[in-house]
Length: 122
Length: 187
Image (cartoon, rainbow over all chains, first blue to last red; front, top):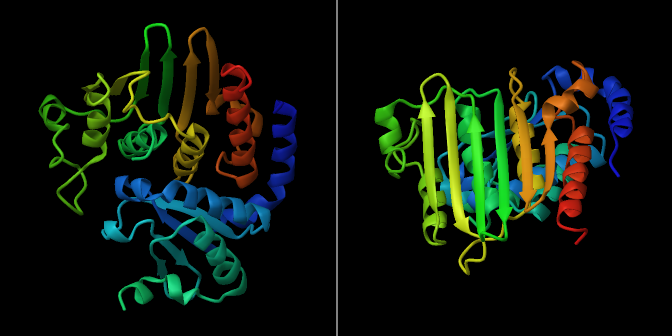
């Protein structure tokens, strides 16, 4: 059973990492979550990304949601904002692609070119 | 939309956009009367009468990026094909109440889907901005009931720890899954 005590432990444990996440200098991963994104499968993508961020303890990474980006046929769309770098837009993302994006781009700094909007429009 | 939990996610985003700080979602499964009722009640800015009359129209939306909004029409179509209906009541500066009804056993009725993932996505969206949105999720199956209220969770977490923290979200997810399992009779 999930108990309130567990929640209290989580509270104590997370207090240390929170200050890092609060200053928005870190990486931001943004998932499009409008009607088009949701219908195309954005929810499992969002949750996979959050799962990976937690699993790898990426405390300076913020996961956020946005509305329709305007390219509904390319949903689910994930945008990655790294400080000092140009925004990278990934299209037609699914959970397994999302894992690769976190592992390679977010953690190792290597853009997964094949999944970007640039590769799609070629 | 593949299942009803995705419709709930989509339409609850409207509540967040409307500036609500409390969104109450309830799913009621009455297997005796063979009805499934989903309601989403918010305290957002509401709609005036004129907009409310047009809101079922796919060519009506508040967004400026495009002229179509499919969230409500899609849910409406899902209800209508299952001997149900979608009703929206709203009052300016008070809030909006949406009620979607289905025949529970209808062959075309989509599965409820993963409501835990829907709640998680909503809580993430609601704790992303500077303003926190609270959610109540109530799921009733005949006589059994499960309820999750983020206001209660926030009391334990205090002001420093956000609902959007990954570890907190994971706890909430498990909490919902367990709760639903209990009211479904452990299946």
